[in-house]
Length: 119
Image (cartoon, rainbow, N blue to C red):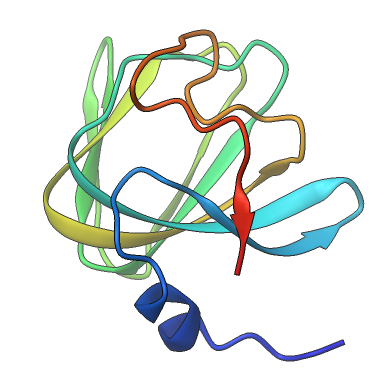
């Protein structure tokens, strides 16, 4: 059991849209990722997703509205809801979701990360 320094872990992430595992509990994974630009539209049929903004801001685009998230904000996207994160500038995000969650949900494309690194 070791403490986790978010600043240290984020300093090890050099790319965007590539989640890294930093912890696990009860079948859930704690992941860190840097976002920049628009992601891909997708949904998760079986999993809810938790997004916590550590540094910066981004917009969670939904088909019927946009939700702006600032540093210190979090959002839970319920399973089945189509969404697309979009970050004008680089943002640091912590995700909390079941280990089975594929980052692009029902879509596979250049953003899909099937094997996540642990840092």
